[in-house]
Image (cartoon, rainbow, N blue to C red):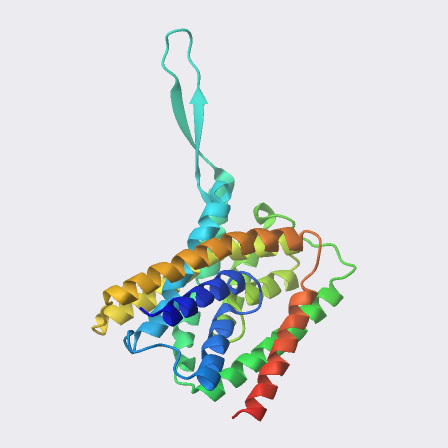
Length: 297
C-alpha cells in the first residue's frame, strides 16, 4: 500500500468520523471527496485494490464509528447494572446483577424505529447505478433541500417548548414515526442522522433527545446496513487481500477516534445552539457543488 493510499484512507476515515454524526451526510461527503479527487487527480483507488472494494470499504469503516457510539453512551445503552452487596465481617462481597428498565424500554423503541429502516436498505440499491455527475447533482440537491428544511423547522420551533425532553418520555408511536424518516436517507446527500433529527424535531422532540436517539438508532441500523453489504460482497465471491484488510483496519480506527470527538462535540453543541448552522452549511456546500459541476463537466 503506497503512501498516497494511506493518506486517502486516513482522510476518508476523518470525513466518516466527523460527518457520520453531524447532520450533513457522511456518504455524500465521501462521494464528493472521491469524485473531486477523480476530477482533479485521476483514479481515487489504486490498482492495489479490487473493483468491488470501494463500496465495501465505505460500509466497513462505519463500524468504527458505531463502536464509538457504544463507548460514549455505554452506561445509557447497556441494560445490566452490577451492584455490590457488602456482607458482614469475614463475609465475601457479593455482586448483584440488576436489569435497567429504562434501557430495556429504550431498546424496544429503537427496535420499533428500525422496522421502516428495512425499506431504506432496499431503496439504497436504486441509486447505485448513478454516474459521477448524476451522483454529485443528487447529493447537491439533497444538501440544499434538507438544509432549507433545518432552517425552516428551527425557525418554526423558535418560540415553542419541546413536548419530549428525554428518550424515556419518547412514546413507541413517536419512535416508529422517527424511524419512518430513515427511509429517505437512502437518497445520497440526505444524511441518516440529519433526517432522523428532522423527523424528531417535527414530532416535538427536543434537540438533545433527538440527537441522542439518533445515535442509539444508528447502532442496529448501520450494523444491519453494513452487514448486508458485506454479506452480499462475500456471496458474490468477493475476498479481501492483505492490503485491503490493513486499509479497512486503518479506516475503522481513524473513524472510531474521530467519531469519539465528533459525538461529544455535537452533544455539547446542541445543548446550547440550534441546527441552523448545519442548514446553512448544507446549502452553501450544495450550491458550491452545483457550480463545480457546471464549470467542470
